[in-house]
Image 1 (cartoon, one colour):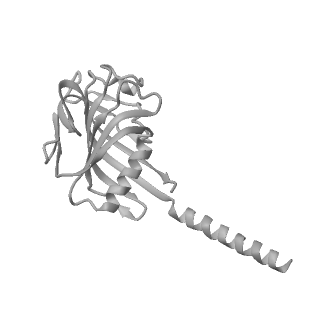
Image 2 (image 1 turned 30 degrees about the vertical axis):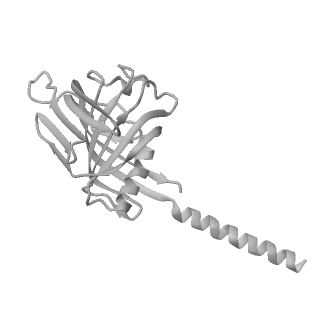
Image 3 (image 1 turned 180 degrees about the vertical axis):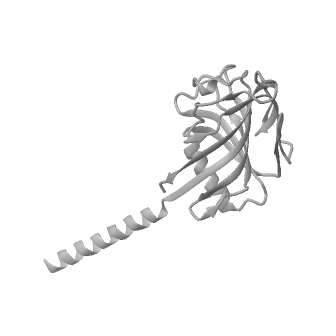
Length: 224
């Protein structure tokens, strides 16, 4: 009987230690970033209203600059990264076609891992093909009437020309529209885009299609 109680005590202690260990691995994160984005749909991208892209595909470029953020103890402030890919003809089943990521060479592996974990929460879909994670310099700038981003390796470029409103001075903005899994955004600042990318062996180029600038903010906990 004593041996049985001793065994149960040991099992109980080990179970508690495993539970504490698992809990300590959960990572809290927060993320505030600006995004220069473009896709193959006509203005405005109907993928924000439906899961069936306009032309049977939604090929996109997203150029992010993190204003402030963290993943656990890893700071993400100032980090720039790039996402290119294709949502396919219908992502309503939670699956999209292909994606490729790129980070600046200065980004640490901890920062890359943290951002990729956050992106899994921000975009709650499964990619059929992940081409890889590239390292390249990223040029990124936003002005009053235009925005521009370019990968240093030549595999991605976005130029936005903002669509001006009735005052002829300020861009048209769509408010109160959710940006994927983000909790907050400051509105979609609409633009016409010229953009291109090479994703794996494939490449694409579009002119006069959807573009926008947006600032998003979100946070959460990643269960590990």
